[in-house]
Image (cartoon, rainbow, N blue to C red):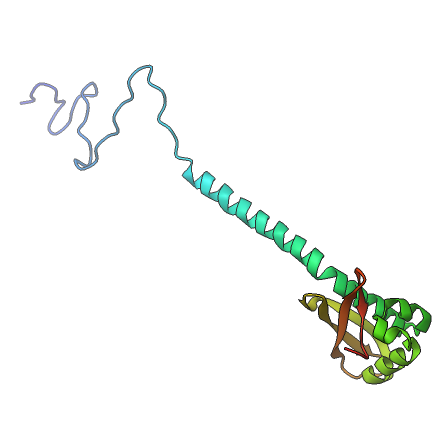
Length: 171
């Protein structure tokens, strides 16, 4: 015999709600009519924006420090090394510190003999600047045209009269 609400053994009628499959799952409460929708969590967005803002701020600060502290000594070394590469003693006098400027030609020859002959190129390394107050050393690399492997050297530079000058002889 079939009881009320059943359509045969173990079946329920379609108009009757079926029991949940898992009795441990509780359905979410229904929102009241006219109630505002539940607020979404946006904490991850705030944290992401904070991390991104901090990263950008650190990148800007690092760039400013690099430009103000590293670039002037690097430029002084680069200009002097260009004079050495092109054997311009008169121009080198402008890029040398006062102790070395009087003998610019001798200083260029001393640097050329120190790095050796057969030079293909000389290039200063912007990341090889070690500055301490008004003095610094700038690393530079010499590549040779005769097959020898390149070598690295350091060039002392100093701030004089508001500008940076190379001081290879007086250090």
